[in-house]
Length: 61
Image (cartoon, rainbow, N blue to C red; front, side, top):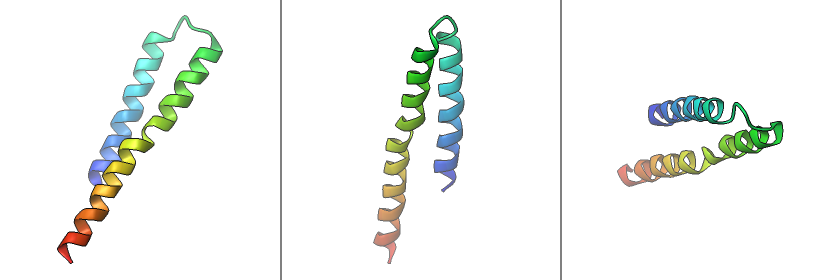
């Protein structure tokens, strides 16, 4: 659980810094698309972490 929380916080901060540093001169549409994609992409690794946590719990029992 701690890994998931740390991942989400680090991912959000990284995506925010990358977006802010690279898209300062871009249009609002480009910024919107970047942050929309960045806001959804975290779900894939988070799902893998949750799957791994679920699988680990079933092997013990």
